[in-house]
Amino acid sequence: MPRPFYARGLSRAIVVTVALAAACTVSPPTIAAPAEAVPVPGDPLTGSGAVNRTELTAGQLTEGAATDTVPDSAFALPAQAAPPTHSFEGTLTLNGLSATGGFRVLKDPYGYGDTAATRHLPPVDIALVQNGSHLVPAKRGLQYTGNQAWNLAVGPGRAWNEDGDGERTRASLPFALVERNANCVHNGALMFLFDATSVSEIRYQITTETCEYFQLDMWGQVPADYRPGPVDGAENLRDAYAAEVGDRLPTKPISALATDYPDSGVDVAKFSAGITPSALSTFGFYFGGVHYVGNCRTRQGEYPFCGQMLLPSYSTAKSAFAGTAMLRLAKRYGPAVAQEMLSDRIPETAGNTAWSGVTLDQTLDMATGNYISHGYETDEAGPTMADFFAAEPYADKMRLALSFPRKAGPGSQWVYHTSDTFLATRAMNNYLQDKAGSDADIFDMLRDDVLEPVGVGPDSLVSSRTDNSPGGAPFGGYGMFWTQDSVARFAKFLNNDHGAVNGTQILDPALLTATMQRDPEDRGMTTTGAKPMKYQNGFWGQDFTSADNPAYTSPFYVPFMSGYGGITVAMMPNGATYYYFSDNNEFSWSSAVAEAAKLAPMPVEAVGAR
Image 1 (cartoon, helix red, strand yellow):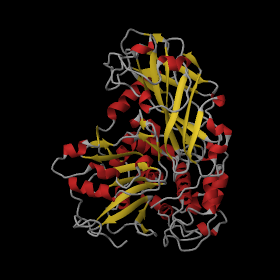
Image 2 (tube, one colour; image 1 turned 60 degrees about the horizontal axis):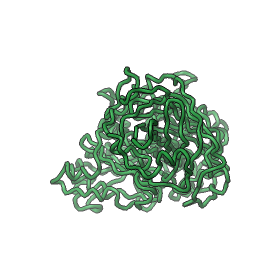
Image 3 (tube, one colour; image 1 turned 90 degrees about the horizontal axis):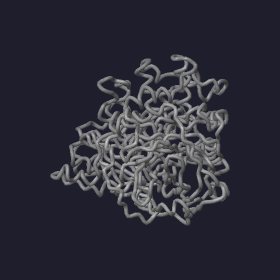
Image 4 (cartoon, helix red, strand yellow; image 1 turned 180 degrees about the vertical axis):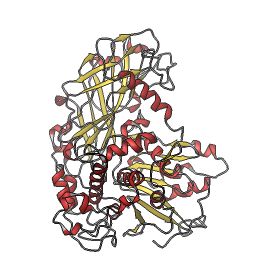
């Protein structure tokens, strides 16, 4: 199953920019958000504050030291958490990070951890506001740090009171390190105490990742400076987060699926079958209007912010970004956009006859006719693609993407190239600028026209770009990010809502039908490999017949998004979606299809020849 990925070549040093905020208002012992803020669903906290804490105690956060990672439950909101008496709004700076902290390599075949800077977090700032017991970063999603190894994302956290903390309030936040010029994500948490004018030291640790080739633990405790003060747009940030939480899909634990459908015979254990437990970041299943969620494992127990765990897209971006962007352009400007010639839309193709006659549709289908070897992902694992992934400047990435020679007629041979998706994304970007103006950006269009209307959360509204800069060209074929709710919501939009939001169609319906394997006359390209499948507009399609399961008396197709290392989002024709994120190169989800078929039959469908 797809997909080898080689994003190498930069020297690796870790820089994290962690900005946290602190407001200096001392309130009565009730939730301390401004009166006009819309409360976050679930607030206020109702605990007594009588928490039996043995890890990260007030004394340890004031005068202790981090000697190793601790159970991640120590960073979690405890059952008896009391409402916070202090409220954050301002900036927190972490100090002395380059001289302290622990680092443990677990898997590192390319030697990234050999660089001394990789083992420490540098000092950085982050701004936060608070709504009740919820801490909301002023900036969500990927942030470019300028460091040679790592970019940063910080998610919403919590604030609460415990009896053992005296007059101070306790805060905990999730954060993630994102590999520069690549898509690996390492998730962690940090904790500290604060009052109106000061903060304790900051304890942090990283104990999990979705990254096949670089796995590590990191921990430390450092001093910090607290600068309270207004944060721009604080009121909007508070209200927007309350709306975000309230709009999330209804969730239940995956175990509730058997309870909700007691006569189905569904076996919930099968939903993670075939995936090494230690390599599984998380998984989930959407059916019948409910998002059934799995846990978020770490090497120190459960991740304390499972719903905020940042997950890499890898090649699911080929579907969710590039393929979906084409469907949106087709709805805005007409389906003829699929037949746009790359040579007309990418100036860098001038003089390169290998790219004449290649359409956008063929490029998204991995059928440009330009390749070195048509063996299954031989090119993707080869030296040209290794250089493409390692290249950070736009000019270098474009030059390498265009370097494959013409070997077959366009549209005649499927050969998997992430570089093709980069080219398709650039062609769409330039087409959009021709239609909407020179300031238009293809990912911004996707964000504004699709992702935000669908309700995808702020953590998923930023894409990695060339030149390690927000002004660079989006990768297209990787570099997006998901949370549990965002991936389930996006799959629902495609699979259940058929590209419509509140009754308004925002994707071209005919092209979407073909993309989702619902048009037997248009299946897309046939892939190579041990089990040939279909590939259409950046989406995969796998057929299931009675040879796979005697219960499948009529054949059907399942379109799916797939990502490097072990990522699958399978959207079944009975309205169910199953997803998982893992990093041990395991692509095993046929058992989930079998369990989903017990809940509702798969629609009868003729399996077309293509």
